[in-house]
Length: 272
Image (tube, rainbow, N blue to C red; front, top):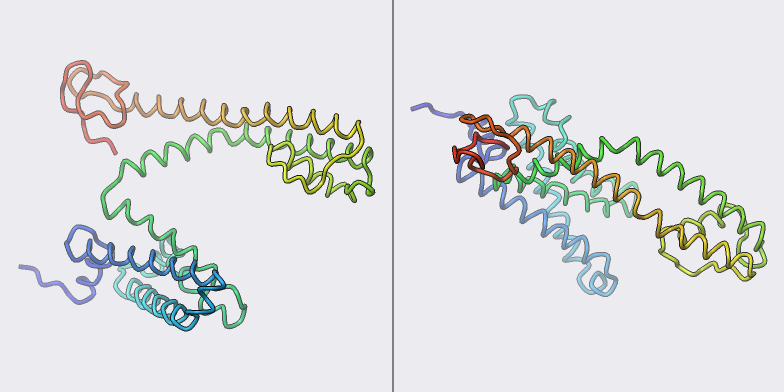
């Protein structure tokens, strides 16, 4: 029987999910992260903070110290500490504790602790929900494939809101709230996205006509990025289906969650 060193045992618990201790550690970590986020959110409510300020501060620093110790242990037991420190989770783990200490120099920076919530993504690894990660990768690849089209679309919209905003500045002017072209562009963005805050409203008939055109244009524009991303997503999903091939009859085109071949019924190879 192989005897593990202290470092190896710590590594197995902190980084691994195969053992019961490792799974329990990660679940406890996620619970602690969620509790720390609740404390942070509650501290932004004035009435709650006024009444329980000391308790919330104590809890916040308790969680911060726990996460600091955890980060130090990860560096200690990792076979490649520098590689871990530079990894995605390594950076997030560090950022999860830094804001509390930075608050001494930059008041208010402790609210950046909300980034700790990203650490909850470990639940996909803990619960072995690899297919969820695969689906998120499909979405990410679809967005990357559509990035040029989205950039062209965004550039077109940017030009449109600049032109429409400038027109309203000329037509309405400072007397009606359109004090500058940037302010007018802000109105155009709010209008074309159908948000409509109503803090700046055209008063002249020509201004109202341009506003009406902008609103109608907004409804037309909203459908464009949806169509682009949907088309790329559909293509990516189709590609993934063709990659799932039966080892018996070579049939492809299976759904990502299929376990058996739709042609011959043979069990499909593992596809994550």
